Length: 452
Image (cartoon, rainbow, N blue to C red; front, side):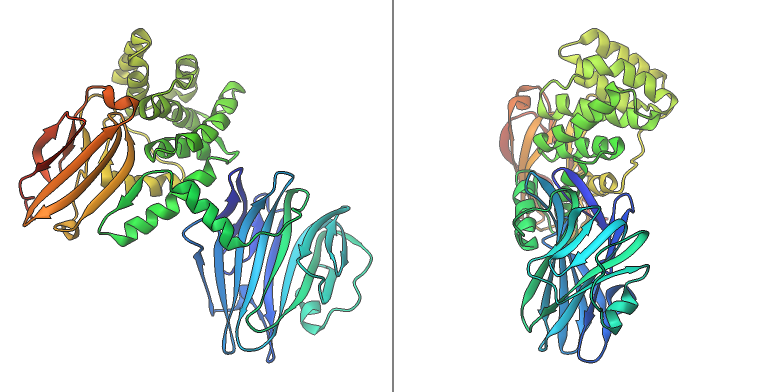
């Protein structure tokens, strides 16, 4: 999984808690020295991992005699530097030694105060280390046999360097690893970072449905979309922008669009990315009700997309331009009619995850037509309460609830925001295919769904 902050991803972490920089320039591993033996997380089977509050922060548990040692990882950014905070909690009855070791290139110097690379502080514990390792190559044999005095410096293509810190029973210790700029002066708690992520995500659509796995999936996906908004990869940013707009997180989508627009102006978009860029711009007009600059970039982006451009994307562009620029909108519709590719293909995993969740909640037309809420209702949702708040659509921000009177669903809905003034209908095909409404708010008792 990716670890990062609002500026984007900073590193990858695998299921054992091994952290690798995005450019694979360094790798950080960890191990635990107990009374019986050393346990290297990447070699152990008794390792399990989860996210902290479903955010781009991780928690990895390594089994030791009588309990666990828990590694937590989050990204920290204080404005002057970006770093990873790695916390270790000793949830076992005896003291352990935590070893945090890295493979890194450059001129490496080690001391109890930390590890520096090419003259800059790169790894620092919240207290002086009890042991320091700086060796040529694999550092683990030296860690496990007992490190001696650290050399003043060592330069190489792969220097093994690490800090050893004693952690008493039920205590924690934190280590900073630099990503960009200076190491932050303060070391934050990964749990606090996760809380911050949840506050940002809470501004978007709320989904409460009977499928707890789907709800958890959305909690993860929305944070991953916010993370992708800061990605320097145009395809990741472009696909994130569309779904962030659907989620009502238009400010986060704008961060992603800035990356896309910059790449478009530089002529640095591949044909498949150009189509995603068109959708990222169109979604601001269609779902946020604000101009995106699509009128100036639509032509060049459509040309860049070439044969990969699909009818659905061209239809979105036409719909986005229609109210203010009817002639270019008509050109986009004619273009859509001439295309052979019918729909776009999702390129990134996070966008695919967002699609899987949101398409259970809403089906928005690429052209004219009603906004279909709950397009298909799973059998297990029958008779269960459903609540969705703040879903951004072409008919405004929609909130709705479903309650049941016997086997008949009662729906309550409200459309708000500037876009709600546009004519448009909503439907609930998964509940009652015959029902529709153009009202801004209301309630209705629908026919009983037909069971399979």
